[in-house]
Image 1 (spheres, rainbow, N blue to C red):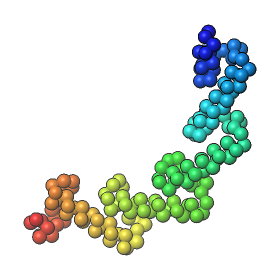
Image 2 (cartoon, rainbow, N blue to C red; image 1 turned 90 degrees about the horizontal axis):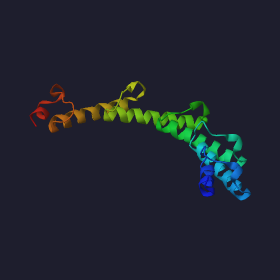
Image 3 (cartoon, one colour; image 1 turned 120 degrees about the vertical axis):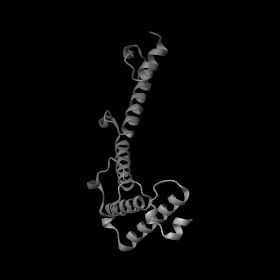
Image 4 (cartoon, helix red, strand yellow; image 1 turned 30 degrees about the vertical axis):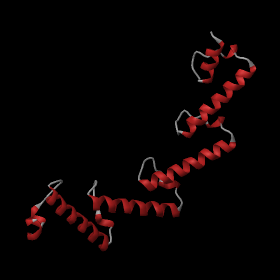
Length: 157
């Protein structure tokens, strides 16, 4: 095989690689490429990651990144989210974020709405937002419109 093509195949981890044909310098370059490829796989969170091949600083950085990604996922309501890995403070922040998301969902009529955890003020805000949306829908002829929910002056507009 062409030495340049073989080196390329080895650096890319392709089956056509014949390591026995590489020089010592090329073997070093291939080893570095393999390490970089594994590190990239680990950073992506793929199961094919070989953590035993990471340096200690790389393993620590990956653990910190995975922890931060979990916290971020939990706050944003994304999966995967392992709430058991959160600190008490982070768990409180996640609960507040979930509550705010639920409140926004109810106000904006996006997805399921469970107002059971809302304060009276929040329940009022949701009802006001829903009413404003109904009036706007009826005026604009878009979305759901229930004329029975309008006042007489609103229905005439």
